[in-house]
Image (tube, rainbow over all chains, first blue to last red; front, side, top):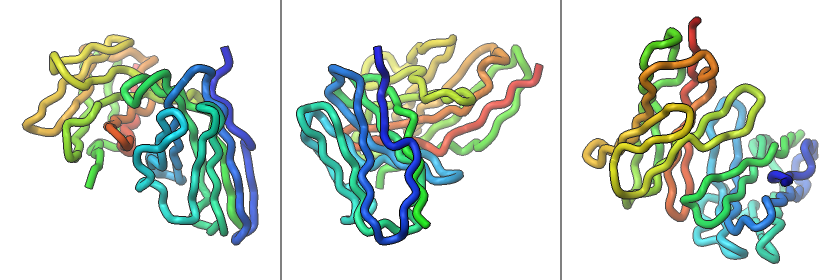
Length: 114
Length: 110
């Protein structure tokens, strides 16, 4: 079956613009995760959804970042007033049930803020 | 603050030699513990995980890891490394949030 998909694969935006990143999890997976990977850095956890709710949003780097998930499926990560330090690869993952089950990662969205 | 430390950025071993990758964590409670592997050009793949029970966990590809609560460690081991094990290895912990270490790059010499 289909894996986790993310769109767009690449996004170049000007500083100050808003961007929206999309994640389609594996069908039937109830948990969904967003990460950020900057050049030379490890994976930085952003947020985790169980169903449509996020138990803890404190991983989001600033109030310019927001995420939502509707219908227990698709999720969007929105970055408002983008800054150059937001440039990174944004990875989405999903898992079948809880945070204890294996996460399957999407290919990522490479965001470049100029 | 919660964190995961992988002290070794890069390790080189000869094929057939044993391997141990270190992982230490800092977390308010005992979290779920994971090891993931990322082969070149591939996505992350789960090797093994631990939450409770036997502190020695067996995973795929002949890997095992041992949870030591007193040391807040979850080191990954393999008795005999194969050339195909060359990859990036990530330790991760989580409960309501999820934290990955910065990874250890493994090179295998034939």
